[in-house]
Image (cartoon, rainbow, N blue to C red; front, side, top):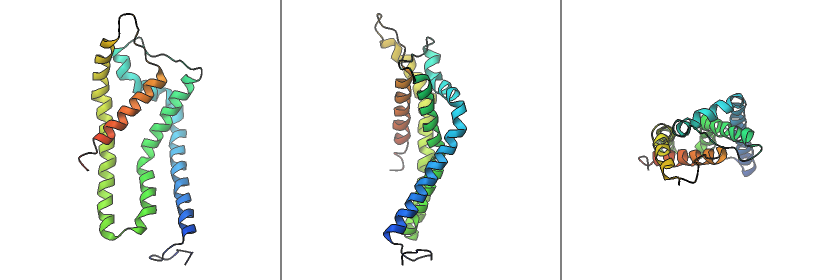
Length: 176
């Protein structure tokens, strides 16, 4: 009973934990591999992400921490790696959960997952192409005359990622 090797045979608790560990390890390895490929381009990724702000605020951004120029692009590369590996991560989650579902439940999940991922990406793309340029034309107009608008690169990354998450989730509302 504990082997769970045959199709349709129930697995024990320990075998479920082992399979979950294996799938989580695969997810981490996938994100890690994509991160290793993206890391040499981390600075370029940040420059692309910062373009909507730089177009409107040519003075650029500030670095307020000694390791900011290293950690912020690295954090961005890790987040982009996760988003790029997300289909594989969801596939691994699906492969773990699917054996416990009925056939009619499985038929509903696949289109739901595919459309959710695509709508999330579409929401983030909309935020980058439409919302961020609009925001950075409006936001600097609220800065008092005695201040200079120069966001910190870490704060900018956190802000943009929050916007991407909000619009990614917001674009999934048609599914709900």
